[in-house]
Amino acid sequence: MQGTPSRATSIAGALIPRSSTWVNVAVDAVLIVGFAALTGLAAQIKIYLNPAVPITGQSFAVLLAGAALGSKRGGASMLVYLMAGIAGIPVFASGGVSPGSSRGYILGFVAAAALVGYLCERGWGRNPLKLIAAMLAGEAAIYVFGLWWLAFYFTPAQLAASVSAGKLSAATHLAVVWEWGVKDFIIGDTIKLLMAAFGVPLAWVGIRKLKGQDV
Image (cartoon, rainbow, N blue to C red; front, side, top):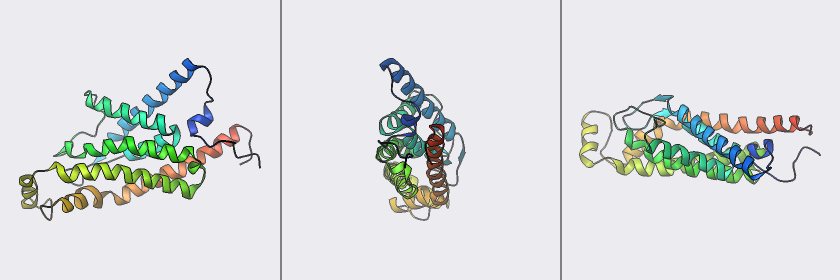
């Protein structure tokens, strides 16, 4: 069958062959900054169901960055996003009672994009089931960083005040992690993961058709 390239790669690598050094640098810069900007735009789609962490479109952009750009460029795009936010550019999700409590997730974006990109570079992006597994691994990386930060962000006094206000069931780290970091996000993150997972194979079909290969 002609449709399988000799070497697994990212979508960007398949669409844009490597050429002269300066062209590679320019293309890489555009892709990295472009996906950082996309993540910043996705952060502006936000819904707060609890005082700490908003539901946004960021994780969709992060998983897509890894699958489309590969490990190095995907991870770099999230580093650019992180540095842009630290520099004061309004790319993070604003608002909420405790916006700083969700910063751990942004660190997880870097790890997630690099991990998804690494797996996709090894052929996981061409198999739907493997791609879903890669996306799940990326989501897990986001949660590891995000939930660890969230669990220890609030002081005991803040937790007690949240319990008194009826915003939290118990003044414990476990309650914070479950109620503010997991419970409200399971359905949304699953939908975003599946959107990214089904979009990537369609992109590979388009690439093969573009190159005149069998699908």
